[in-house]
Length: 59
Image (tube, rainbow, N blue to C red):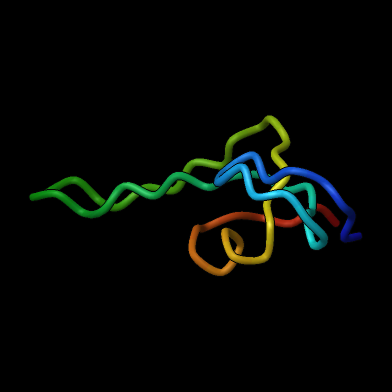
């Protein structure tokens, strides 16, 4: 559900901010496989940040 507020990623203020979990990606390095870590805390992101960075929306 979109709302009005401030984005926790870029600090933009406006409509379209939603709650989500940030995802941290670590690329493959040598023999180490790539990893994905879901941040347990909630953040609020705008549309622009959601199109640029990995995340998981709330169900």
